[in-house]
Amino acid sequence: MARQAQKSVDAPIIAEGQRLDKWLWFARVAKTRTLAAGLVSNGRVRINRIRITKPAQTVRAGDVITVSVYAGVRVLEILAAGERRGPASEAAELYNEIVPLQSRRTTAGEASKSADGSAAPGATSDPAMGPGQGTPVSEAGSGRPTKRDRRVLDRLRSRNDE
Image (cartoon, rainbow, N blue to C red):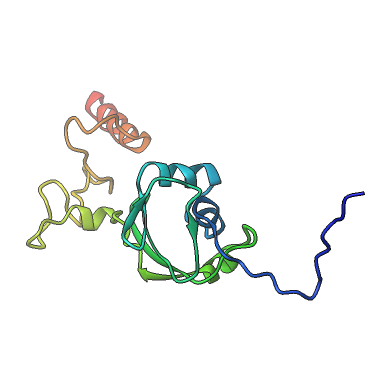
């Protein structure tokens, strides 16, 4: 009969390291483990400034990971290995964000301003209103009229027919 090794319940579990793709998934950097492996395979992940292309690369506490994800670059210092993919609050305990993620998305008002702070042509903070109806006037060729625009046009046409 083969002798089975018994694990002591009181013995602490010492994590030597963890697979990179698994850690990225546990830390909620990627939505799925497959996407995490894809990030690594495509060369979008660096460990201690070295580009990694193997998802099975081992990471340990103290390593600094640079990940190019979605809308920006994140620089994370690993504090601990993950045990499971838990809630976001639990995932945040696995790392310290060195450089916070800056989203490239801007609001419509910020995007329409030029470098000198003035509004770009056609993009004003107070849009020109329609003929007494309180509706913004669309520029020619800007797409189909909205339902509200169509109603305004119908009212104007019916006034002209009288």
